[in-house]
Length: 316
Image 1 (cartoon, rainbow, N blue to C red):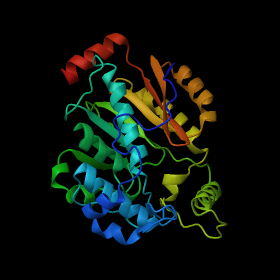
Image 2: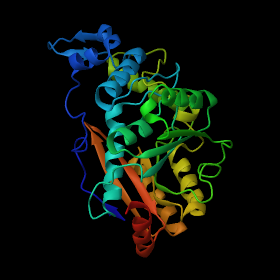
Image 3: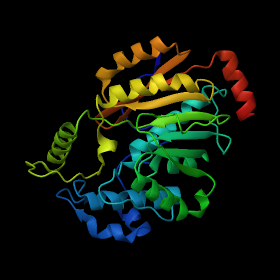
């Protein structure tokens, strides 16, 4: 296992270091303007506990920085913060670059799979906008699938570059999605964090209490989230263990399997699972945004000789 030095801020290539330029963002997306106010320090700010404001902020960021023409999600679905999602894509690009003489690989020769792309399609959009990669998003929820496809339809520049595929069986992750003779250079995933609906609700209450600095009686998720997006039996640890086990069947069709890991206490058990299935290599890649720390776990079954053959076959 290799572990990089712990970072204290966003990836150096991340466009979202520092404060949001809300004035510029509101010019790119005027509907954001009514949600902007001047705080007690005289700075422009946003109520991050307001789900409508957060959704409009995401839309403005995607329009302003990433050339998106249309983006929206149904009420109640996860609306993730763009900076952290962009960080995952940048660190994933670094991971691939390690096998390419340190050079970032751009263009449609790279194809990634986003497990559980949700209604927002954020990871595929960022991967294509930043590096030009092709992306497939898998999803269980029919409304999320419809939303993702509507986003693609509303952005002609994404046609043929991003695809949303329905996962027909909730018991599987890669099966039904990775077909024979289909190869992915990278899989990414933001697994369900909580282990129960109650845990998800309590976590949201804590988040809103911290944002508003006052007691909260009713949960109004500022970042939204359906049940399958927020929790599953056993939480993120069991989901990642399941992913590791199922990845064995697709060991020769994926260069790097990766997943976000929110809880550092889960790393030891994940390492045990990876060693049990006999991966050739795995890495823990630290990420940080302010005081919030997370990490990516990445693993591959490809031997050095197979990695070299992959590079010549797909990247040359």
